[in-house]
Length: 422
Image 1 (cartoon, one colour):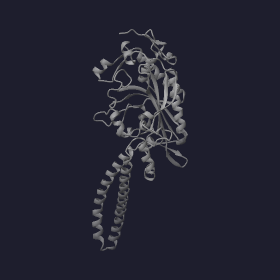
Image 2 (image 1 turned 90 degrees about the horizontal axis):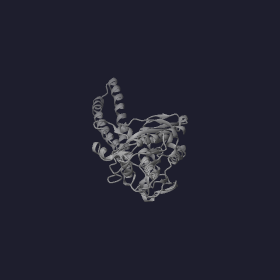
Image 3 (image 1 turned 180 degrees about the vertical axis):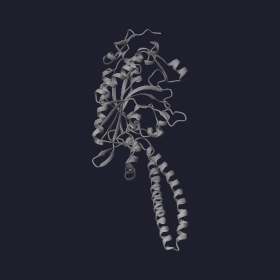
Image 4 (image 1 turned 120 degrees about the vertical axis):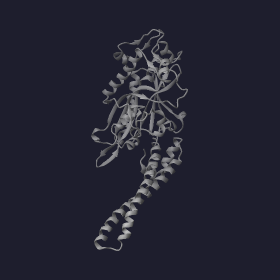
């Protein structure tokens, strides 16, 4: 979340940021009103507590001196705890409301982010040559080749689930193995995180008001299935003070991801592009503030290098202000070319969250004699089901086989997938 000093001392900056994101600027005024009431009440409660301690001392003195003020002191001593309790209850209510509004305020956008809605997203660079339109998309190709079964999956689990079959299973794990080997050689520590997190822990990584409808809640448990390894990796150092000599900490997380896709009705209903369950290798970095943009470029370049190894046409796109998630200060998407649609589609994203997540998760480091918040960054190294869909469309051969990128040969044990049609 934002530094509270920024909201109190420079509210116009926060309002301007909300305007860029097409969000309600009035929430700044609402927060400052409650924050002011909270500060005033907290001061009063602190004064009452001091008064209570003072009265206790005065009663002891009065007993020794047989003071005529004893009765009045005893009466106040009896009444003041009731007043304190009443005001503490009010303070707790204000604290919760204040924190709720505080957590909803989005990160401050970087100055380089284009202002506008998604139509203002800016293409940075294109890689590889786009291919001609093909008949049928990845879903149709895979179903014909008996490599997926979404019909049976929908019967047993519902829409947006799938059975991945035969050589596509091997391809999935080949992509995962390539990404993990690639990042490990880059010095990233491999992590397989918990697949469920508590609400409080999740709130360290996300603005819950936005993400709650996207993730699955475990009934009668304070647990949610993770939508990405990013959230669990962010929690890895929560409530800790990191030795500055250890920074930057770079992790490569591998996990399944579970998402409701509640806002995607009618979008990508076929195949494995937009599903409730998929695998993803995620880059995550904790670093000193002065190094965060250098780390941003590092993890972005890692993804670019990995996508090149997978031999797909793709491009990088910086998201405009209205299309950038609340947690990020800047996001660059990597979009793969889909010949059947003759357009680029999102395969992953790279975000710098500055100290926004660290404040929420209380992740700090020693900077000489001062304790400061770290910066956190995340990047989808590869979301495998989407990558498979892109690979299949771009590598479909005239004889019906699917060419495998050279970087995957050693993991697959073959250079192409040849299967009989149904």
